[in-house]
Image (tube, rainbow, N blue to C red; front, top):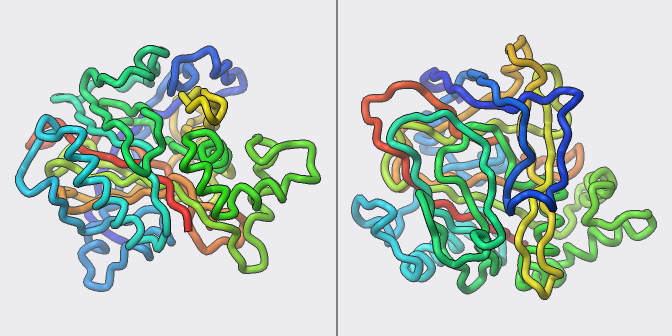
Amino acid sequence: MVGTPLEGQFMQPLIDENTQNDDPWQRNYFAPPPMKKLVPRTHPLIDIRPSFSDPNYVPADLLRSHGFGYVKHSSALLQRPCVQEDFDEQTIAQVYHPEIRELVMKTTGAKDVFIMVTVLRRGKKAPEAFKLPTGLSIKAAKDDSSQGEEKEVKPTEKTGGVKPVGLAAPVRVPHMDFTPLGARQTIRSQAQDIYNTAVESGVIAAEDRICENHPFLAQSKEADPAIAELYNQNGRLGPRYAAYSIWRPLKKVVRDPLALAPSKNITSIDGDLVYWPYENKIPGPPELDGDFLKEFAMLGVRGESPNSSSNALKWYYLSEQDIDEVLAIKLFDSAALGENSQEAGAPWHASPEIGVVEDDHARESIELRVLAFW
């Protein structure tokens, strides 16, 4: 995969021996722990456009090898150039949700797809200093109204039943919206219909069975090593489930591209880079015991100045991504568990600053985060 070289500047949290996670129950909903400092890191970006334009390109193959893939897909929602003000919740739910559900099932072979989050996002007119989000208060998190630069669509049929939050500005910090623990927490606490399908598909039973002779539950951090080792064995997959972000620009992307860095083992990072997991407080439905904790992760650095290991990951992007070029990002895949897995797990992703561009219009996008079961 060789394309036009480009440099992108990311912002990464400085992690040292004094960095600690505070109590997520005391923070706002969706708010990450406060970081001491964000430092810039510049990485070369590899344009995947040549591979995407190859007649032999297959999105599912790139998903399997790299954890992301681009799919050509036209939507009835976008028959003309538009901005997010053109959309209303009912139209998105009735038109776009079924299209994306069908696209995910066709691309991945999944049998059930649940839409957890629908986000309309707009960046700023000019680049601004990036700051970590502060989350939402109880009232804002549970309010049906939407304020500011980002709109969220209310849950409808086959959705998670919860109204989560996203960020208005492009996110400069390399991060993961799920970890293996975060996935286990989500299927048990996000929504009743998701939990029911996780039970019916055998996922819950398979995870619980691995932990039944241990002094911890499947939804605990302590269960990570056992489930990673035993969920898929002897070439046979356990009941498969996965989370994806389905990201589409509302106009051609010339600024703030979404960049992705595959990583076979997200917790095993050497040198300058630091895998930093943390939990956020998430509003949950009363029938599943209400609010819960979900694990996320950031990609931090050990020092303020880069060293030779700072570019250990390869970052990819699609140049001038257009509205019919949909990006599917793995956020988690149970088929990727285990050292001998042939499936890529979730890549790191972020939107780096790429400097001055000719067209400085703010980036706009629509994103669906979905859970899929096989």
